[in-house]
Image (cartoon, rainbow, N blue to C red; front, side, top):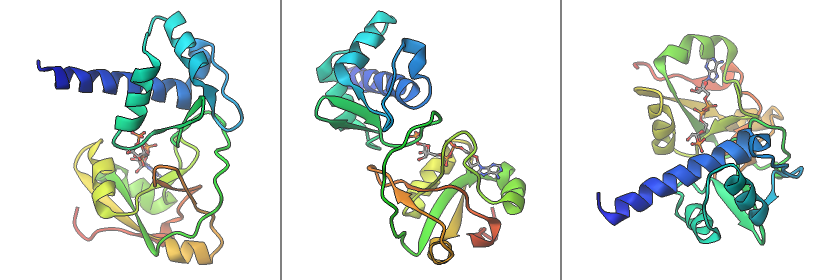
Length: 187
Ligand code: HQG
């Protein structure tokens, strides 16, 4: 194993640890996030170390910067996940006007339910939508052969559905009713 690959594995490991504790289970390592989901980096590092997972501030900076999806944001001495929480946080994002179409990557086995119910936030706070098909394809591919749905975001916006865009370019909305969805003819 060359050194770069080790670096990458380590980066992924720290990134997964951060996702778990900054989005889902901060209490597992005794952390309390503020209303906006922020925590002091020193507090995070100390809490992780106290629970058997050590990383340095330099490693943390590297993970935040190297993360292809910019999942985490550092603001001065604080860090938070940019989106994807299951715990109750208020990211304080201003409503934004979406582009005419947004995209959602999923898999065939969910389509019957999605045709009936539309897209639901499931375990997260919001439905996550991508600005382009390529990104949506990657999101869907996490679960199998990807199926990309188009969302008539312009019509939703006209009908007063609120959209927010996260610091890393993910479009968020509470739900997408089925009438705004376009399904591919073959999948
Ligand atoms: C599906 C990753 C049945 C939906 C990605 C998806 C993204 C339904 C799954 C981000 C449904 C939820 C979000 C319904 C939606 N019936 N299934 N009515 N409505 N679904 O992971 O969008 O690595 O919560 O299609 O890259 O897959 O976390 O959402 O398959 O950006 O940074 O239910 O997560 O980013 O799955 O992914 P998720 P997602 P991170």
